[in-house]
Each structure stands twice: as structure tokens, then as C-alpha cells.
Image (cartoon, rainbow, N blue to C red):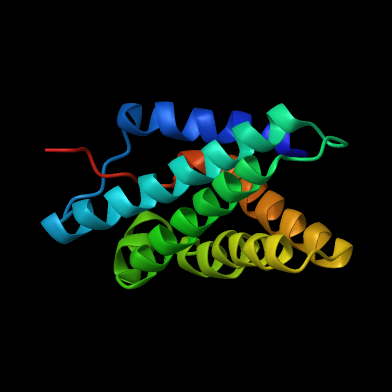
Length: 151
């Protein structure tokens, strides 16, 4: 799946979260704080993908666009790290989510930042692979993932 597919999945995720009916009993206020970081990470990732897509596969971003894209990835990584400070929330959502979130989603973002700082085609391909793997898993297991309702 390419970046466009990833954007569509993220839009589906961000717009569909409040509609999910498979609620888990026992969400805490801390879980709700963690979920804000979770959503903020996805939001920054989605913004990165939106801007990158507007540049196109062969287009060269301007210096301003490069700075903005990197800022979005830094935000996505910082927010994802905050989520991982409380991994029990991810465990409540799905038993495999924590591992995939850390090993694929966050690692893919970190490699994207690394590639922005020191461009390398292999790193770029691997970061895309990790990100796409995570998003495909997320799409495939969407109905199994539990989300808290905002109170």
C-alpha cells in the first residue's frame, strides 16, 4: 500500500474512532490522556502525508516544506513516545498493538526523521515499509481494536 492508501486509512481512523461500539470496561482518566497523545501522533503523521503527497513523488520540497515536514514527524514521534510511557493503554486496545506501535509505527517515524537529516534510499524504503506494515495491520484488525469514548 502506498502513501495515498495510508492517508485514506488515517482519515478512516481519525473520523471513525468516536463511532466504534466495541467498548472496553475500565478506561481510566490516564487512558484518556494517553489517547490524546495517540490521536495527536496520528494527526501529525496525517499532516506529513498530506503535505508530502501534495509535493508529489518526483517533486522537491522547498526549504520551508522540508522544515514543516520534519516538524510534523518530530511531533508524531514525541506524541508516540508519550503513548508508550503508558503501554497498558495500548494493551487494553489490542494485545498486539503495543509491539506494533513501537516496532513499526514509531520506528518508521524515527527512520523518516533520520532520513530527512541524512538522506538514504534504503532507510527511506525501510521507514515506508514499517509504516505501511503498521497501517495495513491496523486496517486488517480495525474491528478488534477497542477505543475509549471521550467523557
